[in-house]
Length: 419
Ligand code: ADE
Image (cartoon, rainbow, N blue to C red; front, side):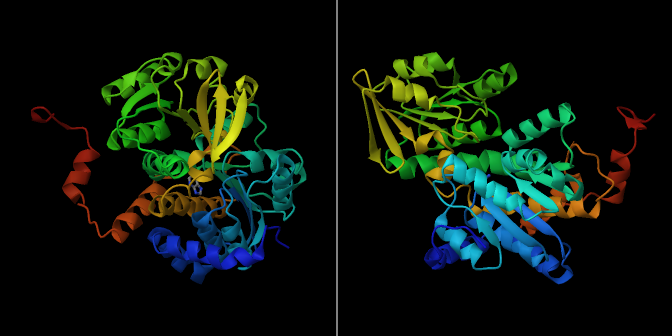
């Protein structure tokens, strides 16, 4: 039995799922293929992801592959109750609701694992960590997992280093068709979607500070420039900092940037990025938000401690009055693109979730022969997903001739012809 907020919300959720389905042709093509062959018949799949419409559609694809599916949310503020309700009416077991407390969040994950899955999909590593601790008795039957995010992979690699990882995990985040598009263009767009929906303010002419210049940070900075902002990037990695400079950003330390910034976005994956010292430097009216997986980048306790007054300024906007200045925190410091908007665009999640489907099928097809490690997705999967996407977009590309292939595989021909 599903645990959801309100089954009566299902019609609204169904509309959302139908809308994204129209814009996810790669997933649609895979669904068509696998609905006939049922490659996961008799297996149970457990999913812990941001429970919004695109995720719901993927869960339905797994159901159509023949699997029994149980799903929970990977963040208390990203679950959409109407989508959860729609999914629960479709033969999928849902354990999630918006704004779950820490205890409820944990119990929803627990319920999901109680379905005794053979395959899991995770976003951030919480489900995988719980599987390896409280549900370790299930490990012998679990054929593998697939991880969606950089943060999740960091955690899993730490587990693998300590020999604590007991299942093979596909690093979906590291596939080209994931990070080049989802992390960069997906985050780039959805973060600004969240900030604009939350604030209804102008970006043009503002100073935007982006902390972290990984693939997500690059996307956030790129789109800020496109919206007419002046962009400051703060980094700890010298190579990424150089890249930010070459891309035309101003690069300075975060504490210094606090004097100039109008809008701040943390997207580092690390904790304690913005702390008391930073808040005290900020201008009146500064807007701060986070796009990293966990809500550990902005020190919310320090904001509470420093604030003489704390009030809700708008939905998803909290005001902290500190020494006569207002600082506005969006979405409680949780992922602003999912808590204040709907996550990445459907066309982007089409790629990411097609990779997830292929990753689980790969794990299942290779059951018994994979090491309990964090494994790269085979290049062939990346290429299949990219080809399907290009095809759906009506884009054709060139092919190498036999002679060209021979040439690329040879070493004899150099500067003066044949050696
Ligand atoms: N929608 C579902 N999962 C998501 C993710 N990891 N990032 C952005 N949007 C999403």
